[in-house]
Image (cartoon, rainbow, N blue to C red; front, side):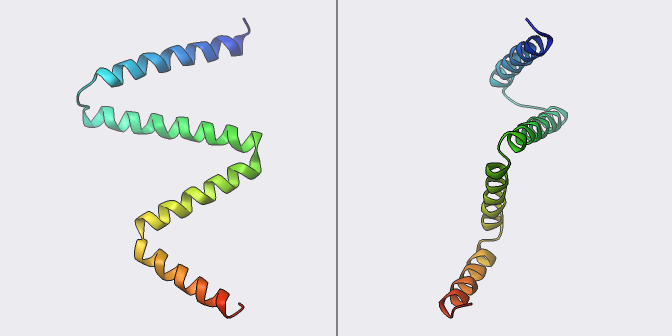
Length: 94
């Protein structure tokens, strides 16, 4: 077994152990919550980095769609206003 395969196996084992601990935990302290949030960000950034390296076009489209969705969710009235302006400009040929 190569070193990278061993590392991947160790990561999967530790991730499974962590999942079991999380599932069995009823509540988390503030410190535990912050640590889990940091872990989430690290994992997410690594996955995005891997996606970006493997399929850069799909990665860019996915990130754009995700940001657009988040913007629409956070600012629904502004999103609606921008959509109406965009449609009006499109209807007059601009």
